[in-house]
Structure formats: structure tokens, C-alpha cells
Length: 247
Image (tube, rainbow, N blue to C red; front, side):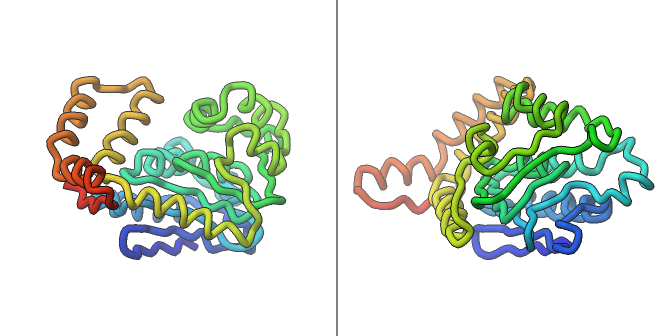
């Protein structure tokens, strides 16, 4: 159900199991984690994650929830890998987002949704305590009160509520979705890769309370000494678009 392609500077992952609203089996989660880790070795400049059909993702397959061992949660591993991916990531939300699909979307840097979409997290309806790492991720992104509404009331959020809560960065008509996603990835691809990767790592570390100040200062000095910095300064002086190479 995982379709992964790399085209130039942009990687795309499509969840393609519309009959199950793109529910993720443990095998699919492991496969996608492996794809992301492989790409991270020589990262693209942007990554798009999307689904097919009426939903983006309905989270973990209920069959797996009932039958599999979740003591080492593969959804948490997947979301951690996606959150730490060393490129700008965009969730192209083609439809509804449910359960663990909400966490998957929140693991991306940006989320673009379509009018009419909905989201809810139903574990309390099923007698399930959601993984603490996922609760932490939602609090980091949306705040503790929105997390309470989603987890403790299993509240359904419509498209406007998702935009107001900060879950969505952009809300567009379905026929405008590709253009907005392309705009975001195009912007990312035109910026300096070393600076983007370094600042994303710093943002993640600050959010998690794990910042290594010395390592962050090294990333700052590395960027200042890079060819990309020299190119950016030259391009600004010459009033032209920079040609960044990631070096």
C-alpha cells in the first residue's frame, strides 16, 4: 500500500489503500519507516506524504490493533522518523484524517488540507490509551487544550476548526491542493539545504528539550562557512535567484 517515488529534489509517498481509508498495518508502517530512513542518507530537499481516495489515513489497522504486539509501537517509530526527516515535509491531506493518521500528519512540518475534510481521534471510544509519544506530539503542535478535546472527548473537528486550531497551515479547494503543495515544496527546494536541515534539527531538539547547544553552534558555523552562504550573499548582491548546492 506504500508507493514511494523520488523525482528530482522532491520525494513523494502515497498511501494507496482507499478501501480501508489508508489504514496502516504494522508491515506498512515498517516499510514506510525503512523508506524514510533510506532516503535520509542522501535526503531530497522536500518530501510529500499523501493518500488516495476519500481519506488521507485512518491510522493503525484495527485488525492489527486487536492481534499484534504493540509494546514496541511501530507507529511511534514511523512518526519519530518522519518528524526527524532531514528535509521539509508536507502532508498533502486529500481527505479525512483519523486516529493515528492525525499523528502521522502532525509529524510533518506543514499540512495542507481540503475543504470538507474532518479529523478525529477515537481511542477513548475503543477503550484504548493512546501512546504517550503521540499525545506529546499533539501537545507540542496544537497545545494541551486541543489535545484534551481530541483525546478526552473524541471531538470531531471540521475543516475550519482544524485551521483555527493550527492543525492546518493551509485550507484549499480540492482542485487547488496540488498547486498549494507544489508552491510549498518549490519554496523549500529554492532555499539553502544545509541551513534548512540544520534549523529543522534545532527546532526538533528545542521542542523535545534535547538541544545540544554545542552541536547547534557547530551547525551555525558550518553554514556560515559553506558555499551556499557565499552563493546566497552573492545572489542577493546581484539581484538574482541563488543556486544552492547543499555544500
